[in-house]
Length: 213
Length: 213
DNA sequence: GTTGTAGTGCACTCTTGAGTGCAGAAGACG
DNA sequence: CGTCTTCTGCACTCAAGAGTGCACTACAAC
Image (cartoon, rainbow over all chains, first blue to last red; front, side):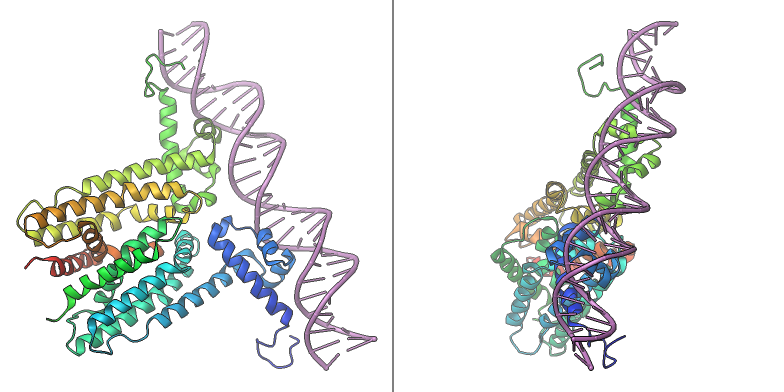
């Protein structure tokens, strides 16, 4: 306890810097090798930091894993939030739904989301709380906000959505279910056009099933 | 080379027995702990076999993993085959589709399939060939046979299926996408009634979108 | 500048776990 | 029966990798 004020942010800048570079390197290593397969010496080397510093800051490998994943989860959550802008606000249902579909698919399948999912699934037995946490913060939020948008459409009579939560699931998995599942097992990501095409096709099917007309 | 005939099945029964009990124990351990996390001494203990025997039979941990998973994949493939009986044979489309939905969901979500998927996903970086192989042999087959059935319905004018492969994906993921995804992150399996209910709901949506009428 | 805290390098300990060697017991097979 | 193979138990080697101790340097804050 040496800081001038009481805040936790008044840290020695050296610590902040170390923390940041370590977490970056560690995240990459854990994503690539899993928890057991990752190796602290390598993380230290890549972060250009002594192994001792890692232990001074994090205390143990498990803590390092948890904090690194914590950052990754926060990022995933931010992604989810920004994805969930408005749905159900205009009159052009079809356009809105198609747009949401392509954005959803591109976000989930285009970035680092799949790697994070692979890691969490692989470690679900060892770190069930992290897997749970991810699910609540990322896919859970997306589903909830999709459901909100669908509910709005329903209330305005533009779609017939008796159960918005269920419909949100149908939407999400029509749009990206198959490519996402595939991607979890594949080493390289799916082609963007392929993903976009299926997203649109899924959106069409969703509309056919849920349009009021 | 001591066997009387030339076949590979004329093995010393001791070897066959060892192999079997080892693979059983190993599969369980790998499913629970992943490749790196599994430990050969424990596998030997659980199989009630000396560690030396494991190495006499399999030579190395990686080989043990591959052969154990090979059996598991064969089982998964058998499951897939028996699942894919006939679809598109009667006139009662709705009943057939609903039935296929509940059977599909129950098979994939009720048994050991989810654990196998977790393992393969977690090891996809280390054993990409196994993940690939699984995908081709299990989900791939199911998709193909679903597509066949849907094509039959289309040809008979009972459903309108312009792209059977795509429609098969839509069907599968409407029926069990959300629970399957959820299950990959959860430690305990979903409730059977829950699964069945969603399967039927997904089937209804599929019919609404793809019925010719 | 002085003082305190953080980071470095490196040698070190300890544990775990893969894989081996061997001598003897137990089972297969003629 | 005798012979050959496999299985066992156990002690062993070897490598990797987590985590520590310490003397020293470098930077931060006043």
